[in-house]
Length: 471
Image (cartoon, rainbow, N blue to C red):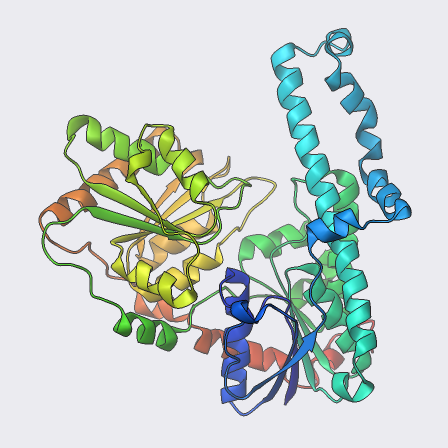
């Protein structure tokens, strides 16, 4: 097959969002397919080698949010303001102590409500702005390519996010009538953290992709459930397929073979987190609360929390809640190979997520990557809904321990016991127990995931969708 992949995150292999398209492009090419990746230009120092057998078509640089905001025209600013305009009356009330009292809103509630409203307004504007930027970028990119460069493909794979991947993928699909289009949405576009005006726009974009694509792929059952909660999407249920984020085991093994082995003998318990700490719902405080509880009874307990990424200040802030900031080791930004080496030197790998009634099925791409490290995983899941999909995976696969905020004090007690056992093991010079279900673990290997994508990309699938608007 001639396969076109639309992926904004590809050339730079540091972001977790680039792992999936890079692995898929590499493995599809190895299986004899003619793979072309359409991706924006990146700075040379941020550009990783192209996987063997893959052709890259370089598109214009992807828009910077800061740059686009500075150059925004008057009409565009007015359009963005329209999305927050319905909140002006409420903002006016909350901003005035006198009006707030008139409407029976207390001072404490007023301040928190005003702060939350402003946060939602900013998130809404940022999300809509990114959509507008993506539409303009995709149009410009399409205009710069000749018909011969964008046609003749049997299958199109677009990998959201950001929006540009999806929109340019749609452009390729429309220029290749009769081709198969797999829209790899991964995560739901409609998120509860933005205003209803923004959710309407995101729902329209999501529904448009679902209606036009041959197949929609998402990373978890929770995301699929979230999409199908919208009545208009339910008739497309059979076209939504769950394919998790994963790992390319052989590459990880090669990186680990080159890494220095972990030191033997008594040592501190080393806990590692590599990557972004997304603000929405992710919280490492339970980890430091448990460490603090252990140190209350055993002051000599040795624990190190290693962080790699550009948000070390957040991890330090979590630790500072209990005066434990000295435990945090901030490595800053690392290359992918360096991050794998750091993971290999850890005893325990940390993943953060959330599970709420209005936002379920959040499974970090780090979970798949951590599985390749063959280290115990500690999952911390905030939110008001127990039984998170991530927690279930950790337990079913027997790869570590999962804490859930919704389970209350008992969950914190079990987390403390788990960590205390890990501390004692390292004090005795013993590795932590790790006996995963290898069959379950293999389902996250990109070799397996690519085979499933390969079947979805096979020519003729678009004809199987009687309601596809691209027919």
